[in-house]
Image 1: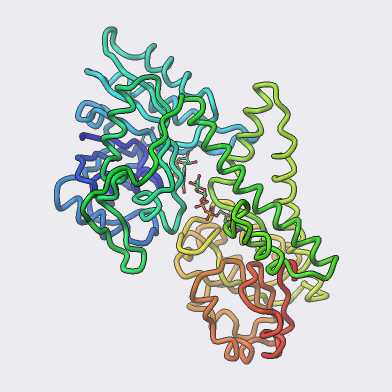
Image 2 (image 1 turned 90 degrees about the vertical axis):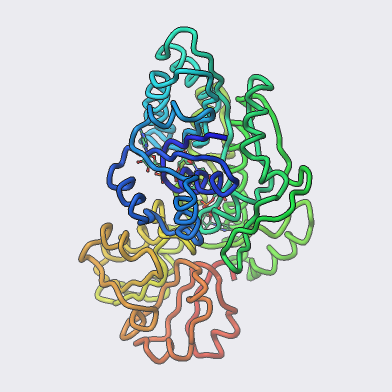
Length: 452
Ligand code: NAD
Ligand code: UGA
């Protein structure tokens, strides 16, 4: 298959490289010239485990190409995935102007039949607008289909998620488009290509038939599956965070409660980790966009409003917890471990660290911080308002309290005795429930966590 992927960000680059690994001929497009120039030099714009090796291998095998030119990519491909950003507008709606812009450029470049696929997360009905935009802007007589193929990968495990998804969803208007999309995904559906998480390498194996469910739906249902899935996961997190707050009042332990709930297979263990609320580039914006499109269509989705409210409150409660642990925040020095919104990524979009650090700075505190990979992006964000350290121990040294915000493995495996010695006071405020309160007490820490 000849595939174009427009938008070479987290989703576009991972999708492009994985399709190339499946044996397809892929051209990735981005209008960010620096990004494309760097990719030509082998410089990967994001931190995503395993991605650099895969990009290099597929470029070398001449299956993966990069360009800034949409016409070149469209003319050379039969399936065109749109993977540009759909960021939030101040109203909470998704900003679809990037999608419209790309749809217009695709339309004017098409010279033969193409399937144009929304891979970006978009509100229901976007497919109809994309179709109309392409129809208005393309040459008469050029045939095309618009399809939806939402992406469910997570940052930090993106390659594994893409190559071994729980399901592949395609929303189409006819069999021709469904068949072309099935051909793109065939090696993944049959698990001829998969990813070894431990070794961080792709494995090519004998295909087995139809292992990964390939679900064909209408375009609207497919668009809705994505918003409904992300919002459901966000709801699960807000639910357990609300339970955690209740546990603190009731003297129960949210970790035990979540374990007991999750053993019911209808509930499941995943996404029941209480903490400082969800962040990242997706849950916050997608829940808001789902709420807004519901409003537009005439349905008041109150439940989603509550999910958003609980998430916002969770960060405020955490900041209050810090103040309560410290008594006075002004002139205190805090050691912050973890800046990215979750481990194994350098993504800082909607990271809880931003709110926590800003709140402490406003109160007159000093901040020392460290993150295994998000240091450069954080330096751009915070500048010289905070001190960046070389590792966790350097951060803890002479700080008045330690605050853990991202559960990177290297923080979960800290030498706690050493940390205890380095801190001015043994105050440890854990936003991710990484340690057992009893163990921390034994080590002499004044340990604060969530819902326990
Ligand atoms: P991103 O910001 O990392 O990447 C988007 C890219 O599109 C950027 O490199 C940008 O330069 C490029 N772009 C914008 N306009 C362009 C144009 N006119 N021509 C060519 N390139 C253009 O975004 P992302 O995180 O990859 O997300 C993309 C979409 O996928 C969003 O809708 C998001 O909700 C969805 N999604 C993201 C994830 C994730 O984990 N990040 C997972 C699933 C779905
Ligand atoms: C999420 C979804 O998991 C993906 O399926 C989806 O494709 C993606 O959004 C998207 O649409 O962009 P991602 O944002 O990369 O992926 O990360 P998650 O692992 O889902 O974590 C999201 C946030 O929830 C993080 O801040 C994380 O710390 C938080 N979280 C997660 C919790 O607080 N508790 C949990 O139990 C799980």
